[in-house]
Structure formats: structure tokens, C-alpha cells
Image (cartoon, rainbow, N blue to C red):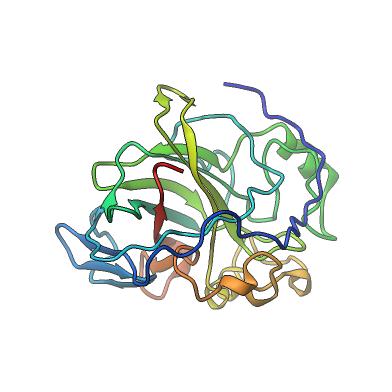
Length: 275
């Protein structure tokens, strides 16, 4: 495994020119339907009959090309293929299912490499030296995070176009709303790591502030100075795109009424394979 790369950078990621090359291809949205039980995702709305629904399938009559967002300063090319990216981090469990669709053909993309990275419950990214999540930042925690690889990993999509990760609900850091970064790569070589290929999409995933309000009341998220937390509507990157598909994950509680038991998060990302 490669050693984490320490980067000195501005934590705030305040690049307001966040949407790059791509715009909406077609009106409409991709639909996810489970093969065995009733799960349907239509433009980001999840109706789930059971919390343990099977891997969804993309069945789209119309497609949306998801606009890109800034990569941010904390991407590391560790190329590490793994489903569980938690390592030693504590937090509310999050099973993340990302469906990757060919927006030009309205079909799932198999063997796409979905690379995700995000901060922990207190706003620290692994592998970087520039962590400053807020006024509660701790120098020991900053040093430990800089030498770690938590909450980073790659999964290949199935024949149904699904990449699935086991992670935790992200925390916040000053200047940004809660989010997960992702990169979709195609035509590379996969072993223990993923190498080569080309990048078809760079984006970010976001969470409902109302849900986050509840999450931050629980350990290990509680006790932080939440007056410094940025909400979706105030985020310099996401605020102008809240109503667009392909950004906001749909969350379903694993146990109704007990958010401490975690969530299933699902989203469809439409990409142009030739990009």
C-alpha cells in the first residue's frame, strides 16, 4: 500500500466554479428497482419496503448526465480496492450504494471504478496535513489523521452498475456542508489496487440537513461547536444545485426510529463513458 500523501491546502474548498464540463443531457431521471423486494429510486426519492433490500438494478427510460463538481484538495491516489473503508473511525454506519449509468444509452456500466473519500465524524481527512475542521481541532488528532488511510476506497460496479461501500455518516468541517467526494474511472486494471483508465466523472454527494441535525446530536458527532457548521443552502459549491439530480443521496434508516443503527444511502450517477 502506498503511504498517504501529505498535502498542505485550504480546508474550505471554496471553489465556487464547481460545475465543470457537463450539463444536463436530458430531462427526467434514472429509476432504481430492486430485483427481489420493493426499492425504487426516482430522481432521488426512495420508497423502501424493507431496510435490507437487495442490490438495485437500473431501469431507466430517460437519463440525466450528472454535472461535475470540484475534486477538492484532499484526493489521494491510493488506488485501494476495498468495500469497508471505516478502519478505526467511529460513527453511525452508512451503507452507500452508487449506481453508475451510461447517460447516453440509459444502461448500467459494469466494472466502473468508483473512488470515494470523505472526512470522519469530527471533520478530519486521512492522509493530509492540512486538517483544520474547526475551532475544536486537536493537534494530536491532526497528526494521527495525516498518517492514516481511513474513509478512502474504490469499488467496481456490478453487472447492475452498483458499487457498494461500508462507511460512516460523515461529519462536518468549517466552510463546507457535509459531503462525500467521488470519482468514476473506466477501462483501468483492477487487482488489489486500481490502475490506469480514464476519469469519466468527478463529483460530490450530499445529505439532507434535517437528517444531519439528528445525527449531530449523537456520539461521536455531538459536542462539537455546531454554530460553525455550514448548511446545504449556504455551501459555496452545492447551494446553487440543491434541486438537481445526482447530488443528494436518499437515506433509509436500517431500523425505523433508531438512527444510531445506521442508514442505507442510494444514488444514481449518470456519466458519459467516452468523456
